[in-house]
Length: 145
Image (cartoon, rainbow, N blue to C red):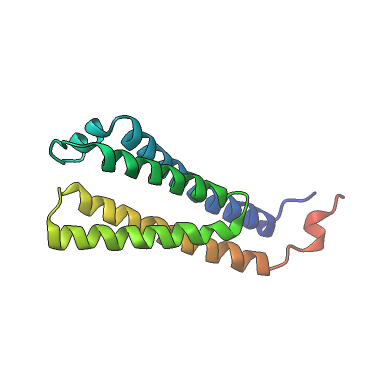
């Protein structure tokens, strides 16, 4: 099999998309595990005061873990990429509303920016991946000499 620029471009586009999906899924899972098992540490780290009840922070950990698993599912079922885009868009909306109207620690602005960047990067990588998939790899690149 000969390596051509076309085959390398296809592989790189696939690797970029899969890498982004993996990072986003792992990010959500790690946040979820943190909120589930060490909610006080997570809340203090991100600038929130002491909470009398840890039920809702721990519950958010379960939801983050579920969302992270669904994000990782996109690695084997590409239609789950929509879950990343929709969930991150809703997260940005939620964070922006809270930041503007309810006041939050400054780190929440950074979280919102990160949550906005994640689906944007996935959409760009997905479009590149789809554009390259529509460009056929020359038959000569797939055959042996």
